Image (cartoon, rainbow, N blue to C red; front, side, top):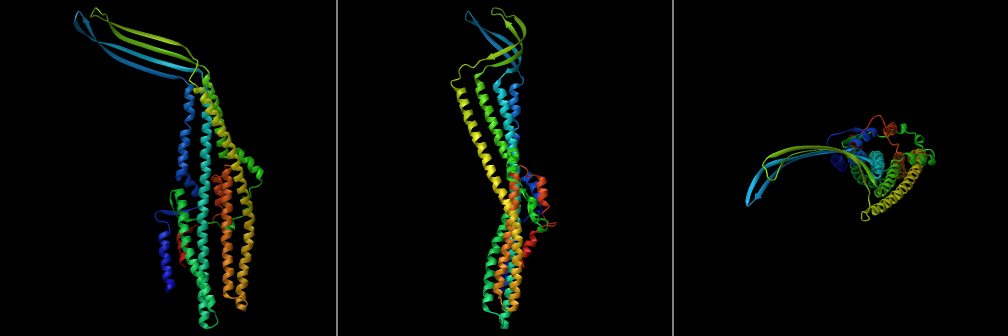
Length: 462
């Protein structure tokens, strides 16, 4: 009766913790595709990059012709006072139309500002690519965490079913007079511990699944697990570290973005210094004026219209601006120094992270084969102890202990391979190569069918 009440309680807890609403099965590639559409952080950077693209046309406009027009329509009212007598003169029009063209001829500041804008656009594009790589890392990390949480729950369910079977066998043996009370107490203690762990794992599944749902913007009912039969860890061997470091210097979006910032800062120094130089513009204008001229001593109207065309050049020479230009130059130099230090800091950080993930992959490949052997040894140990029980040289407690060790090896094995794959994704993102093609490669590791959430619930309930 106690066991049945416990099972009912667990089913209720599972129902509360599992995702609700519209949900569906999903694999790695589809998760990445949806995240690029729905991840809020990525969309923020997308909008920022789109705004940054406008820096070039804005800077270029300062070197292109500027055409303006003005239209003025006035009406003049005049009161004339003579010998104490005030006479109101009827309103007279005074219209003026002007069209002006200005074409910069020599403006070094604008030319350097255009160069700066182009580098800023490169930086914005690199930042967008860096965020796209970051989306790949977040999606893969959330997906692997979800798989690992469900793997742990599945292993725990298998442990619990095994201990429950042993508890039942030990109880029958004690009733038959061939068992000992210690086996029952040990099995119950282990079972109580696993039940407590099960509640925590169910919550962990809820959290990890929610992380994935937030990234892709949709509910997740099931995730496609990894099929160990499809996995050959050696294909993820990253090769030589020196080759990867060279590739990162050429293609890393983070490094490329900081390099573009450094070049933009150098152009800003040239633009600030150019404020000392004169500017030369070509100016052409058309002017039309129309009005009525009323002579002071007469009430007669004399309408007139004047048109004029003018063209020429305008030379502007800066002489003194109160120290503003020198201050801007010093500011630009300081900003350039900052961007230079940020570039080298980014290079050093990227190389360090690259080495860490490189070693993690190498170790993961070696651990994969080691855990395969460890799992075989653990299974053999369980089999030997089971035979020992039949021969009278081992007890049920001995079998329980070696089974616990086997389950721990399975859990460590799962964690190791997920960490290796996550390190592989991070390494590719650092050098800017984590794209849909690489997700297709990861997808080949997955089983042909998903593990639904309902199956996880059933595992916990059995």
